[in-house]
Amino acid sequence: MSDPRKTELDPDSADGPLSPEEERYAEEEAKRRAAEHDMEMPIVTAMKETTPEPVQPVRYRASDKLCFDCHKGISCWNACCYDTDIMLTPYDLQRLAGHFECRPADVVRLFGSPSVHDRSNMPVVKLKMLDRPGDRRKPCVFLDEVDGCTVYENRPAACRYYPLGLAAVKIKEQDSIENFYFMVREPHCHGHDEPKEQTVAEFREAQGVEPYDQQNADWIYILMKLTSWKSVGGPWGKEADARTKKMFYMASTDIDAFRQFVFNSSFFERYLVEPAMREELATSDEALLKLACDWLRNVLFNEPTIAVKEHVLREAIAKARRDMGGG
Ligand code: SF4
Ligand code: SF4
Image: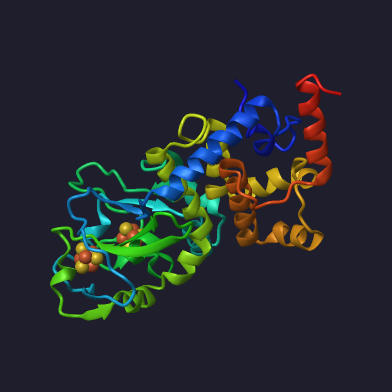
């Protein structure tokens, strides 16, 4: 069976959106959206994976208070930087690339490990832990055992958030998604015993998570939605196909390769992108990541996040009619 999303996945493909298969797909999509609308789905978006045990079953809002502090000299100094499972977001890679004056793909090659985000089954890159002979625990590739994090000012979002996790919930019978926070209380972390009281908002401000949240929002939305597919069921086998996963990984980890794809395929012949935006895409990684996410949302979820050119739609309709035996 051909995949009706192939048109959007491959700008060079001539397949159209109106074949019988695609109509069936549209029906399934409508059913799935209705199912999503009717249920409450908690979508945990923590980028640092933990076992469920240390996660406190309490929802924190921005104004809620927490007691926590982390500083050099604390008895558990660096304990959280060993054997840890941290997913690197596109903005993490951008910031680390800036830190090392290289490109995001170099950061992936030197400091990352290709992996899978368990909750969505999507390919992602995780922070490398060093596996040295004789070491009892695997330290993060950026850890200096005396001074701590060597990339502190550009450390990943998950390290900034810890010990908070970010979660989102899709409210029953509403289209909106609501964010909340939860606490991860691991026995090795003594920061919870420190007397420093602060609100979640103050903690977030001190950790500088805001630009990370802004830049990663669309990308995380995709992971969240794919995670929800695993529970409510997405079309075509409940998860993205291999080609979509490949494009997602490319856009997430190698923005230069995605730029090559956009500029060297018939992408601009198929999708409406204004000339001023094309110029921006040639140099701006942020603009390109936004385009990648808009395109993937269209491909994966059929959302109207990118405009297909009219002649492409007309060709697709004509082809679909021919395929169905019409004139
Ligand atoms: S990036 Fe820095 S804070 Fe994060 S785990 Fe590595 S050493 Fe620790
Ligand atoms: S207090 Fe927690 S976050 Fe800070 S160094 Fe210790 S284990 Fe890591």
